[in-house]
Length: 294
Image (cartoon, rainbow, N blue to C red; front, side, top):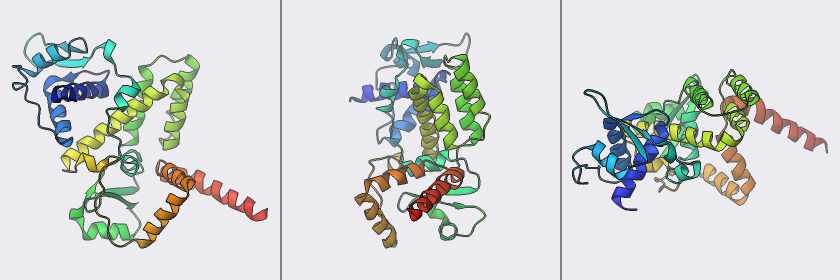
């Protein structure tokens, strides 16, 4: 992909992320250069591309793909995706970074009682209950410079994303009412699963929209804290692991030999503490009790 094509695809992804709201030209240019920086690419220079202004570049290079609204007097232009060029889920997902599950969970689990940090030395997520003493808590206090706190996305924000999406799609009255009723419940990973299921043919689009929004939050946090985005993505080169934890390494090898355990561990990472406590643990205990009586 050439540099110009890379710039244009990133602009379209940024606008898709913002859709249906327009984005100011200056802010779009800032987000573009931030993403280029995290991807290890040089900043975009509109004059080197042969244009006087960023809006001129958009008008010519993305003709028919974006809508540019110019203010009646002074002020910045507003840019949005043209209706004919809204990205499909498959198009957008092929260009989005795939965030590591432990990082994703750290941002999307809104449990305020759980504090979470990114550990610079090995790129892992450290978390613990705020009102409980633990080795993780001691390690963070002892080496604060090695840890960057992760503020979870508030449940009010995540529920508002759902309301916004619901208001922008066509649904039968029954489905809309069922979705609205779900959003009256306390937010959890289970709520998102049920909401997605209820959306029917719109489920993939919702999953993509949510991924875009969460990824944007993570990108902004990474930029503000000088954390390389590449280290938060699947497929990135792992940082050296601490020489301790032989037990954990042995457990990992055990899981690798049993694929179903790996799948179970991955699913558990997607659940919050309340779901694990109220659903997973009671189910496992019941299963073990039944097996012990056989």
